[in-house]
Image (cartoon, rainbow, N blue to C red; front, side):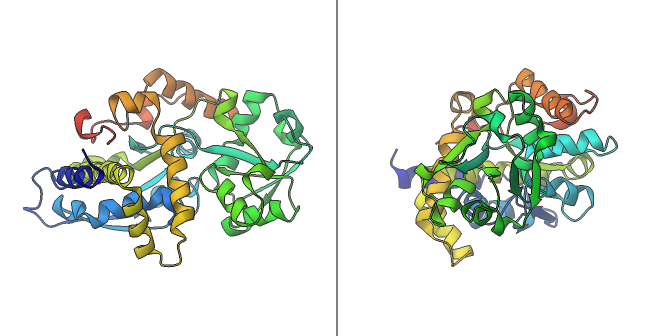
Length: 339
């Protein structure tokens, strides 16, 4: 099937998601993204532009995010109904707030993007060298919040590390100017942003957490169990539309970047296309997802990832996969296959 035909097929599938929907008034859903509108977020715009949400009886408003760690805080505070974020800060939040009922209703990107980045000529050549250094990142950055897991996996004494809290736009400049020894973030954001600031990819040394046996799932759709149970059709519609958005953006990446430019006119489409291609390669096309579709999870792997978050923060091992994840709102597996 050609790219254009595939795109049309995916759109057709998208418009069937609405569960026969819209005899009643549309459900308003306030949705928070994980980060700024960049290449990895363009799929949500594809989903919105397709008309899928309206067809499914959902009136959705989508706001940019400021880091995966902030999303569970905003959801728990009632400021948003649903959101997109790396699942692991939410696991931490749930472990620290046992009365919370936040859950993931889909794991859109299975592969972890978490990284620590230093200059290639830095004396930091292996994880142990991070001890005694200064790292810069926003407080709600998932790479920062989950650095203790990387530290535990590699034997780093993370109490020796000094953190500098910065706004998202100042993180990469801190490394380029030599005001921090390293930064944490996503492979899709920090490495390309550094390149744009003059630190080429071959001038960067990247420590992928997943290369050090850190077992973590990643970008997920979040909500509260109460909201999902009160609005099951609306939540199913959002999940189905977002999955279809990923499929459409994979089938036609250039169209996804056009949607991004329409939404954010100052976007550099070539840069954002690079981010999206890295997302597809490193975060989406895992063997399990290629074989069985988006939001295919391994319960044993997921349970180990939950335990690693709890252990890294000295929290009791009390959460189960069923506490954190529900597959009740997913479309059938055949509708979740990659294009």
